[in-house]
Length: 338
Ligand code: DP6
Image 1 (cartoon, helix red, strand yellow):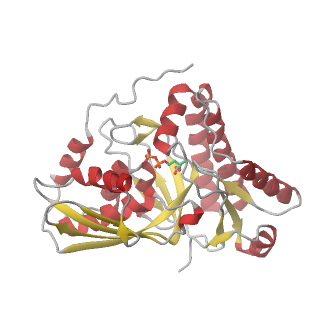
Image 2 (spheres, rainbow, N blue to C red):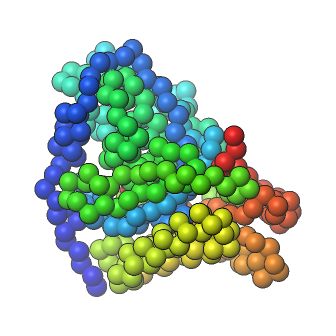
Image 3 (cartoon, rainbow, N blue to C red):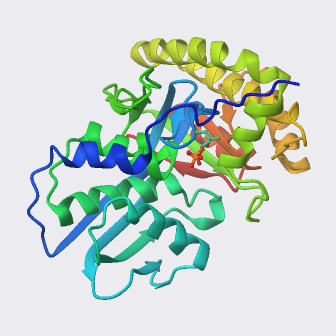
């Protein structure tokens, strides 16, 4: 079995990373900060960290943001402790603890925050994501603290909350450059400016249940124990290039095929991990077969999946009616709605 012991091989802590960036910020605090960030779905997945402390990925990834679906967050200063609200209620303990630990990176001595965060992503879709959450939080915090960071810097700070949040700073397609530097300063996201109005994402919910193994643990276990993981970085690099080409050329079959294959390859690496990791439910597999059968019949329909049992369909507007007929419960998202 592969044993990789260099996960925290870098010497820089996340606190030091933040201090380095803050040195360049011009500070003038405001009374509040408020921001929205979209959820995103990776077409080329981020799976594996080369540095767990700085959340530096093994491979570059590429995503599409979900337009108006995402997280809105308001941040203010609080008196004696952090006060964290999720969807209008006191946030669950684990959620609040994760946010407070992230806020620790930015607070001065004795400084506390009130954070009010709301997801408009139907939680039922299993998409209420840390990606839009950390991206919205860092944007709101930037306003409150008066840092004036640019999106690239904000994406690096969002990265420290959750890797996929790096890409949620942007609408439309976003690319997250893995980077090579040990200090993480070249690992940021940027937009890929290529609007594609007819593109559709369909969410097929299989289960609302909280997954037993989170992404962080899942990707670490895969990287440490899966023999198949060795093949992943090369496939991801190749898929990343092909997806960029497909997007620029608006070649939908190439986009769909590459995204679906990338997701299945990622899941294959997990299944070969030990203990095995399989996020699929029987219904996930039966939906995959339905997609494949429809495609054999000539429908241009593909899917992608993250670390969970739900499918995200990829199709074009012209096939929306056919997709809805096949999957009456699908929730259709228009990523490029103006
Ligand atoms: C399968 O960003 O949730 O969705 O950085 O450990 O917080 P952490 O992981 P996270 O992992 C996302 C994994 C994925 C693929 C992707 O979004 O690229």
